[in-house]
Length: 358
Ligand SMILES: Cc1cc2nc3c(=O)[nH]c(=O)nc-3n(C[C@H](O)[C@H](O)[C@H](O)COP(=O)(O)O)c2cc1C
Image (cartoon, rainbow, N blue to C red; front, side, top):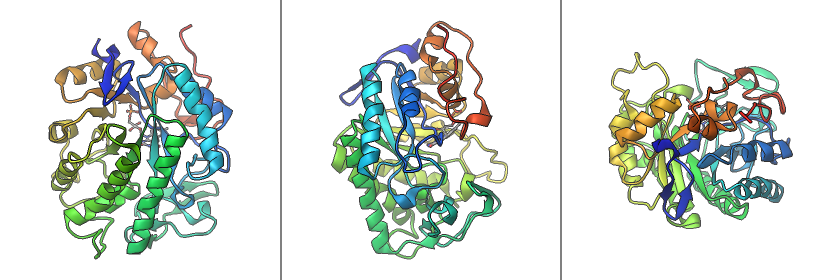
């Protein structure tokens, strides 16, 4: 099977073409440190070729969900070292996903501080789950131009910290409505400085962050996750195809490890001009490996690799529920079903207690 073949990206060899998609599990300490259970969770999945961690907050204000880990304090860095050492000891490779939630956060999670965003535009039509129940989203505070540049530097510091913690690379979370995605789309970004307006300007934040990450990590160690056809979290753009085409062409100028592309997983009837075939539309624009994500099972993943559009396939829910996913694919064994009730809480239950075949 292609999925089980080794592959190399840059200098890094991966045991197979299976990646674990980044998944927030809300099991970190209140200070955003990785716990012993988190070490075990990642270690259990070390047979996967490339593990991409859950979204990891780059700063205090980046946090948008309780008990999510960070990578901005020395204690957090130390705690992640135990994760990287455990996964490396089992021959696995792991990238840290850099996360800033921007306007999707809530002041109740930020000690009363209003969340920040490109523009003071709030998410309409959804409610926000916090530790104190469901809330309307708040109108975020628009970052000043100087503050935008500070956030870009925070990404660079977080990337250095990830290197110190022993990761093999970093991935920018540029998808699913979080801060970088908020800069990209004209439905959330109405800035009038160099970070808003034209497609070039709206792409600038992501491109400047990526350049900082490459400056820290060098060639072939930095990836980015994008979801060009996912309108979740109010990610509405008037011309996503032009936007993401430009962005990917600019990303090509950097020595990146990969582009992680999420399929269109949400209904698009209201958005008939949005491309439904994400890989077909964008994969060929990128001149480095593509990791395809979203809705794959082992069979459809194998077909996708055979199509030549993607070099790796990432599994989210199935990697969460099958610590021995690789062995199960190899032996064509049935897969455990993910338990949605323990995705974002539940302690060790639904976290490190999914059964393996042996
Ligand atoms: C519990 C859970 C948490 C998630 N958290 C993140 C996250 O932190 N960062 C991210 O980029 N995507 C996150 N996702 C999305 C997954 O990375 C992936 O894109 C999605 O699950 C689709 O892949 P799948 O169909 O194989 O599950 C999460 C998904 C799940 C199920």
